[in-house]
Length: 320
Image (cartoon, rainbow, N blue to C red; front, top):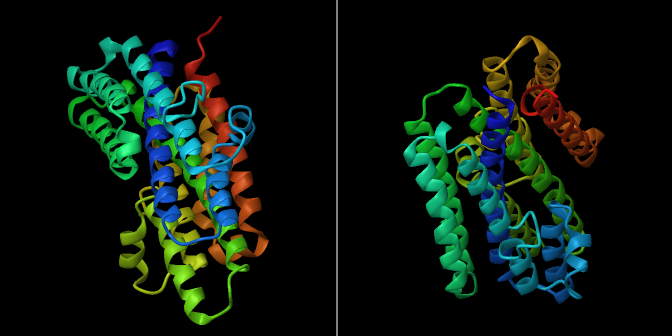
């Protein structure tokens, strides 16, 4: 496969996944903002949204204060923000258009219709009328895109590069979300009144919000059948191979796909991904928490970013 074509397919799926992940994060933050809280806590909630995507400097260059409405606009409809939903879905559509011949008609039409419908929704004020419903729509279109690709495309190299972009982006986002949210929840936990009822309510709403942001709340109940604890949340989202958005599950798929598209000049990226997967397979959550979850996730993100660079060099950058 031509490197240029692989690059477009890889980034088409990454941008689609990124738009969905942003919608998930904003949906949970919006729902949480409806709960009674102090103004300072509300501001920190929306600062956390910007922190996950490392966008605080870019936001501060555009807006004076961190408010719910400003953050929603910046993360959804601001075309000057390359990580906004509108920017991501536009980039996904442009990458799909560049390799129209490698896609089935159904896959192309899904991407194109998503972009056209998004523009109409934003022009009709869908975000302001019902943010929750808008975020559900974004998630649905991402699910539809993956489902149509799975159901109509030949499972060749083109399909593999679509899947590779999806799982690499998902691993990155899950790690960022868990790192920022875990730290914020524990910080706020120490600031609440120590009445047992208050602690229980805090535990339920905030840990369940984190789980819902990655569609893991019902999975948690099925796996653990008990109260939500930080240790089990971390275990589910980091080490559980059967949790679709966990770091382990994502890296397992990345390793499998890299084996499927391997060539002699790409062994280093395979080894890098294999070592990362092995660490997840044989780690224990108590050991991770003892050494510090933040340090572990920071290192994971560094390694995933390095892996992404190696994949780009091995597969996506055309020879001069």
